[in-house]
Image (cartoon, rainbow, N blue to C red; front, top):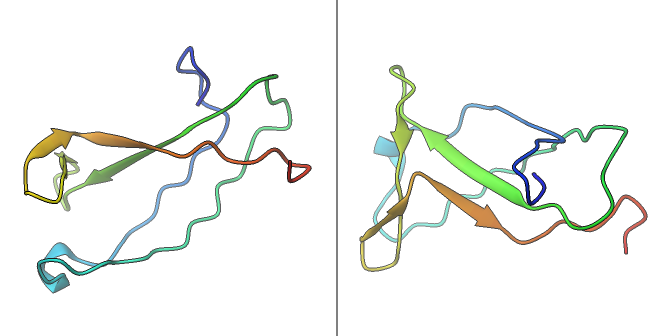
Length: 84
């Protein structure tokens, strides 16, 4: 996603059911995000959203103290296709 909110790639996938997670556990799900052939100059950022099943409602991101932060997180900016 660019600074104006335009999307240049998206990946949707099922994850490990929340009832299988334990408090404090780290769950890693590798995801490959196919990108548009026409990327803008400048940085892009990755927005992470999680949903509940089967109703597909947003699941809020929480901090280490259990406080609700937002229904999404912005992750670090990805590197360009050239790896720079």
